Image 1 (cartoon, rainbow, N blue to C red):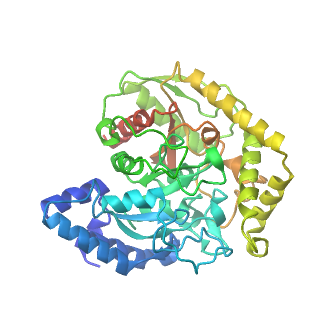
Image 2 (tube, helix red, strand yellow):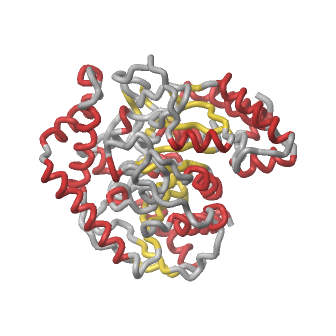
Amino acid sequence: MTDERADLTELTAVELVAAYASGEASPLEATRAVLDRISRDDDDLDAFCLVDPEGALEEAARSEARWREAHPKGLLDGVPISIKDIFLTDGWPTLRGSRAVDPNQPWRVDSPVAARLRADGMVFVGKTTTPELAWKAVTDSPLTGITRNPADPALTTGGSSGGAAAAVAAGMGPVAVGTDGGGSIRIPASFCGIVGFKPTYGRVPMFPASPFGQLAHAGPMTRTVEDAALLMDILSLPDHRDPNQLAPPRTTFRGEFNREVAGLHVAYSRDLGYVEVDPEVGAIIDAVVARIDEAGLHVAVADPGFTDPLEPFEQLWAAGAAALLRTMPGVRETIDPALGRVWDDGEKLTAVEYVQARGVAAQLGITMGTFHEEHNVLLTPTMPIPAFEAGHDVPPGSGLRSWPQWTPFTYPFNMTGQPAISVPVGTTAAGLPVGLQIVGPRHSDDLVLAVARFVEWLLAG
């Protein structure tokens, strides 16, 4: 691999587009560089379950012809991108990390995410790994094995969008798209040291509808907030197949992400009032928040005022798993045993218990709405711990029984449907990334991106 190609794998999506426009680089060169990096590194990381070099190079060649004529199709025409193996993608199987999904199907449907990226002219290099049916917060499955963290391959990426996070962090494409039902974008973003954005529920259309209902979101995973903003402008376009989609945004995210935010009233909760945080992680977040306050945002220490909603979240999660797995013949023989136990839990729930859990989620949203009347955004650690040993559903020796118990900062904001982003803000003494979570009121996606950009700028200065 030449030095020129190695450099191209380090460029952001925005930088690649600028290079295409100036003629300093081409989509074919960038795509070859990414494919070379995948070929070199992915045997160790297992970020991809499918790579399509021939298809990617064909798409890149078409993009290159458009750039030669100065007529790109969209904002990120020719930029290599990977897609989590949860989204239906025309021409590729979507196996969702499961042996129970038959690969011998027509596979002729694009999900809204794939359709919008394709219409923009982006280059699909492959599909990224997910735990079986995206059910947990680490990325390993009976079908694809264990996905490993580029910061230390002995450690987990987190999940369930762990393949996407590993790909972006390791230079195997500047951007990716993941899903987030309990933190599945933000958790691996924090563990791998990238930006991961969960938009407001319904902001990015989804089809088929997720069995996890209103917990389920889709969003960008990138190296910079600017790249996330541009991807949001693509992903937020409407699709009639999602009855829960929001109206198209009135402004562009790329036009708003860099706006002035000094003077905002910001709340900082180190532990939400009930979370045990690793001392080193807490110290890193404390120091970053102090810098944010000094730089012009008014930071007040304040908990949002709710107790841990773990039980209702797990009920909603188990009900979604049971609803999905019921429809998959033969899955019981091949399924991840831990997912089988979640399925069994879901089968025991009554309709009344499900509605009661939804009621808790609704009240949580009301509580947060009241909180945001005083505080524009809420800052928390994204994760209470750094990445732990790969191949385990919970940190070894922790005594925990389920993944939501070690992801307490993320899943509450799936229950409320609020926008939340993880931005990298430092590393531990062992070199492990730490993320800061920024949460805003529903429909304030542009504000959350703008505050994230402010933090990114502050730490780069």
